[in-house]
Amino acid sequence: MTKRADDQKDEKIAVETGAFEALKFYTDNYETLCFRNLNAKDKIDTLGSKPHKCRFCHNTKPDVNFSKDAHVIPAFIGNKVLFSYYECDDCNARFSAFEDDLAKMTMGDRAVGQVPKRKGFTSLKPQGKKSSFKRGPTGVLIKQFADEGVFTIDENNSQLIIKYDTQPFRPLGAYKALAKMAYTLLPDQELEHVEELRKWLLQTDVITQKVYADQGHWCFQTFVPGPAPFPHPIVALLKRKEPVNAPYLMFFIAFGNSSYQIFVPCPKMDQDLVGKTFNFVPYPHLYMIQPWCVPGSLQQGLLLLDAHERKSEPRTLNMHYDTMVKTTLPPQQTN
Image (cartoon, rainbow, N blue to C red; front, side, top):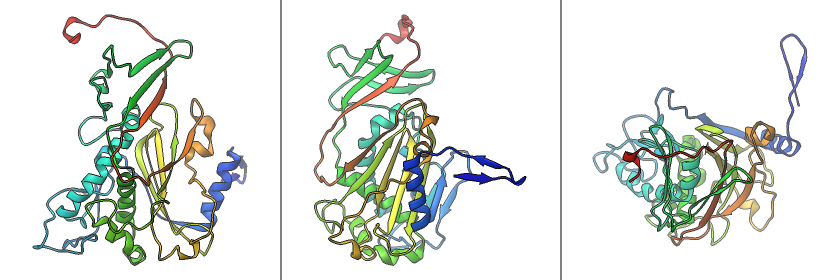
């Protein structure tokens, strides 16, 4: 892959081969509907226009209110700049339950990545434990209770190992939260293609009017090592250009150290895929294209978010450190 400068000299750009093929796949077969880097220092942007009409329930004032700040991407992911006019208070309250599932599923990764939330930064609070990992005014503060074993030190490999159980969450609720973000970002002319998704989003549970059957709620995840490789949330929404053996809509989001990708439920436009198999092509972010830019190996995997019942899941996170200095806390910090 090359880039031509104005002086006609060729500047070669090194690219990982597999990621380059994925990049070519999306360039050839998809068009970008939305790509946003949500830097908290940017100007606030509000999608939609007044007078308000909820794009989810289709209600308007005075039948519903629009008094809450409707985040297009949740605040706990670090979004402080992208809002919308077309989400009523009733729908906003309903979506908060699904976003809670996503928040609990990603809590550990967000804490380690020091992802900002509405106020402060994400803290790790393991299920059933008093130990915690949180960012304070002078740095990260780790509280370890001797009988819990959440945090251990591997001095031979210079690693802090964190083992914990997540707070109970519904995997399908987390998937629904991701699908809701994608629906919110869609241009108006695309909404007619995802009516089944809208009806599912209107339900207070995760099973009623579910678009897919018991399987198919996939989510491709990557974990990128290093200090916050995604310092601001990044979102992308892509649409298939021409008939190809791939889903119609793809949604991608990255924050902290992690990225998540789903194919948005769209049976109207994906009916030709029924009964067929297709290759899951991950959407390549920068660190997949140039993995040598980070200190360590990328971790990649496919999450199956089909389960509808709340459950805790075991997690293990490894953090590398350069040096360790043993010290004594001042008396006022020992409690």
